[in-house]
Length: 115
Image (cartoon, rainbow, N blue to C red; front, side, top):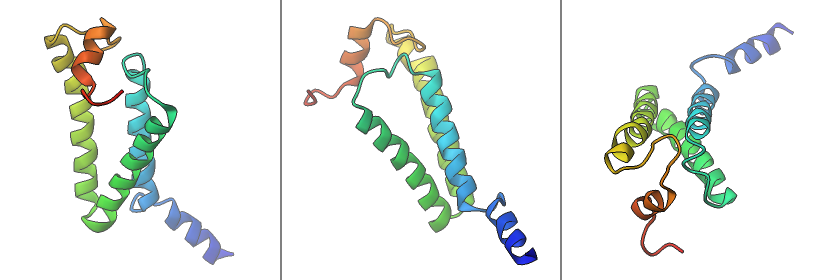
């Protein structure tokens, strides 16, 4: 019984890849929630793929390059999201919280060849 308890405590450790995956999913969820009004368009599958890709990249970085690289990636990506919404969008005449005017936001952020 003690062996099983030790194994469970090890899986709950902060040194686990599960912790990195949870942290990545949490940050993605917070950013998605804060800026949901801006990024309300787009297929659900693309948004889910973004979540899984973000978590997978974070876990891969942690496993292959180390925890420092994974945490650096999380910090840099979060800083980019806040810069984009707090500085870049307002400098281009768009509200960073709501994405209004919507037409201007879409014209600046959509690729030209995407339907």
